[in-house]
Structure formats: C-alpha cells, structure tokens
Figure 1 (cartoon, helix red, strand yellow):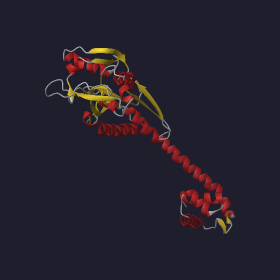
Figure 2 (cartoon, one colour):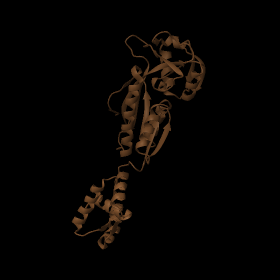
Figure 3 (tube, rainbow, N blue to C red):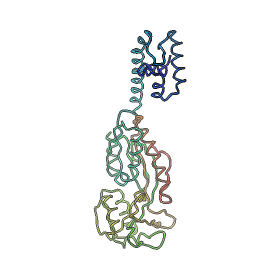
Figure 4 (cartoon, helix red, strand yellow):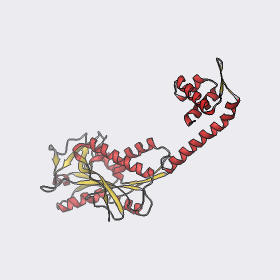
Length: 319
C-alpha cells in the first residue's frame, strides 16, 4: 500500500467512476485500475462494487475511506513542514542593492526568484555600498549586492565578485554622437555638459576621483540627480553622463561610447559587482537559492552586455 494507491482510491470513491477519477489524476484508466487492484490485493479485500452505472464502496471501502483521507492529509502536512524547514515555502530574504543595480540586475533577480518561490517574503534595501555593508553587519540584511572600483572585500563578510563592468558615457539617441570614434577620452568628456549624480553614489566618488587624478574639472550642467532622473535627463538631451554599462540594456533612447583607458596599459574605468553575506552565519536555504539566482542572472547579463561586461572571479573570504 502506498500514497499513490490511496490517492487513486479516494478519487474513485469521490467520483464513483473510474474514468472520471483517472481524468482528475491525469492517469490512463488501465493504470488507475491496476493501482486499485494492487491495493485490494495488499489489503485482502474488495473495496468497490463495480457496475456499468458506476462504482460504489464496499463495507471495507467505507471503513478505509476516512483513514485514507487522513493518511493523505498527514503526508501533505509532512511535505509542507519539510519544505518550510528548507525555507522554500515560508520565510523571507532580505536583499540590499545599490540604486544602479536596483533598476537593472536586481529587477531580473527578484522576478526570477519570485516566479519560482512566490511564498517567500522579499525585502529590499536600496542604499550605497557602504550603508549596505553596515546593514549587513547589523543583521538587517541576508545578502547585499555591492559595487566597488577595486573589488577589495570588506571585513567580516564573504564577498563573491560576480561581474566587472565598464563605465560608459551616455548621450541621447536623438542627438548627434559625442564622438566619431569607438572610445572617448576623459578630457573630452570633461568638456561636455554633464549630469552628475548625487554625492551619496559610489559611482560619483569613482568618477570624481578619475577626473581629479587626470587634473580635470568636468562641466556640470546639473548636479545631485538620482539614477532614474539622470537617464531621463540624458534621453531628453540635457547633457551626458558616465554610468555603468548595465543600465543601457533595453534603453533604446540612449547611445553609449566606451571610455578610453586613462593611461597606457591600464583598463578603462570599471567597477566590480559583488554579492556579500556575513562570513559567520550559515545562510538559510531560501537565502542560498537567492544567491544562486543572483549568480545565474549575472551570467545572463554578462552575455547580453557584450564587451563592456565580463564575469568576475570566485569567492573571496574577508579577514
């Protein structure tokens, strides 16, 4: 006697008809009949009176029915309990991410994760990388998607580099290109009217440092904007901006050009996207699934972005 046999028995009892029960169970009728016959053989008694007009329970069948229903209910309860313990049908994942990632990679990650695990509560914190690491250290987050220019891991965390992406110069697709070449020098960008991010952005600190190192002062036409606003202002032709290559995906109103290397033998401006978690806390199953979802989504993004983005290395544990 097994659960499939009991489930078949309960459905035949409910419909009083083998054909309708087989349809409900998505079984061929001969398969259903064999399951009932095997159950009757195991129990040593007939469970149904079979007739052309339908099938009715015998006395033995009437005795078995409430027991079978209870056993099936108990089995489903055990299945749910185990799934809940695994963290895949109950629980939450607290994810942090930077603003630039929230409008690109994170949207793909959360969509994919929710489709597979709709019962898991998702909490999102949108902050700069430094603030996200503070929240992670304080137990407010399970995972954080952070960005750095040098990929150095923070203390007390395990940091997995996912992607390395270039910073590119964007302009309106409705305006003439800012250069006729494949790349643009940082000095030429400094001479263009720029829309500059809020000082809280990690990206702003990185670009400010690059201009300062080259002894350049960029022309800012607007300063202090958030990512969504920057992209919209550039689309309207208000100015140019330096942004991560990732945000260009699915934005036909923008065109981009790669930055030239700031010095011979050096790579263009770029940043590393990493996922961080506490080094001394074992992740729950749902958190681990989220981490795998992030990795898969990052791989897909790299494939779509082409030369401006590449996969990073393996996990680095911070000391």
